Image 1: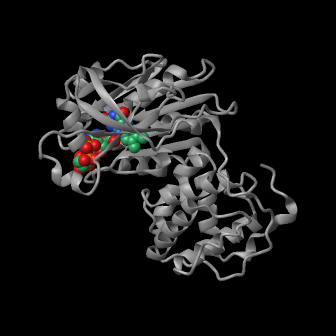
Image 2 (image 1 turned 90 degrees about the vertical axis):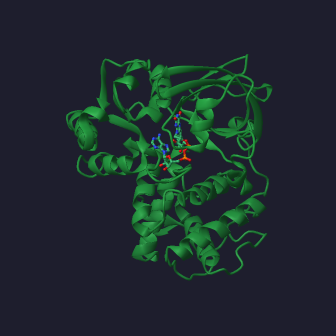
Length: 403
Ligand SMILES: Cc1cc2nc3c(=O)[nH]c(=O)nc-3n(C[C@H](O)[C@H](O)[C@H](O)COP(=O)(O)OP(=O)(O)OC[C@H]3O[C@@H](n4cnc5c(N)ncnc54)[C@H](O)[C@@H]3O)c2cc1C
């Protein structure tokens, strides 16, 4: 979208804290790499990766309501009137004052979903002690209807719960199990873009998980490794790490068992023509996404993959191999594994220009990797997507960078 210059003002209108906040908010909306960087930097403002979700949804929802809403790029030296009004609205929400003026302080009517998101974001700002400036709403730049716009992707309702049946299981290695799920309600899902994820909610038997489910259905995120049309069969490859309520269900499930599936969401958007190379990094949980991405990568891209596995068993899994492929075994490298992953990645990126990095795995590892790549190697934040797929010590970890 081309911002209308008459609606732009100097960035100095905002104090330094606001400028920092605004640039991160823009980053959440500016594409996967920028989003990872924003999430990484939000942590320094005491906003966790999980708490970034409502902000991501907020900007996405505003854009659906009014595609002309002027959010600039993260490094823009100006600020749009729409952005200033957005921060005023967030300030109101954070001070618990009434947020939603139905006729539209933001220049559009406010659907319920948006009011709730403002409330959530306001709470997060209050808890993180981020204080935005008091200023009046600036003249509306445009009035649009409250009707949500839809794009073709939204025709698949990613929030709907679909009942699915396990139709087959297969051990890919001693700790990775392939599960195929079938459901008529999968119609419309496709295997593209690669790396899409679903949330899987097992139908637990007996009262073993009654306590866990008392506070709501228990679900975890898995990547669509493959999707067969028109049979509507979805393949997921799950790591049996031994401690998790859903991975344990997947370890034991048999054909005929039932679960529910929400999604799909996310997925890898093909990289721009400015990139000539791609580095993919991940642990065993990222093997399905890395494999699916490699299968769809244009041949012009020179790819390298580095995959961390617990032991030689992990290397039994078949992965499409680019010319440059490397397993790193944590049973061999021990505590040096992080150092080894980061060392391999930095060595590769420092000698090659126009590289896009995609990485997923343990959240702390992903933060360390990002820290080592972006600033020290002067890579653009937009060229480095890092996603925490799980976090040591946390159940059901969520990272907004997953999309
Ligand atoms: C976008 C996305 C895609 C993903 N795709 C896949 C996929 O295709 N295959 C896959 O196996 N996983 C995938 N994951 C990771 C998966 O969602 C998590 O590992 C999830 O926590 C597993 O749920 P659980 O019930 O087994 O464990 P939880 O109840 O969530 O966690 C219980 C304990 O186990 C630990 N734990 C969780 N996962 C691991 C792990 N892998 N290794 C060691 N300890 C762990 C946690 O730190 C916690 O202490 C994906 C995650 C995301 C965000």
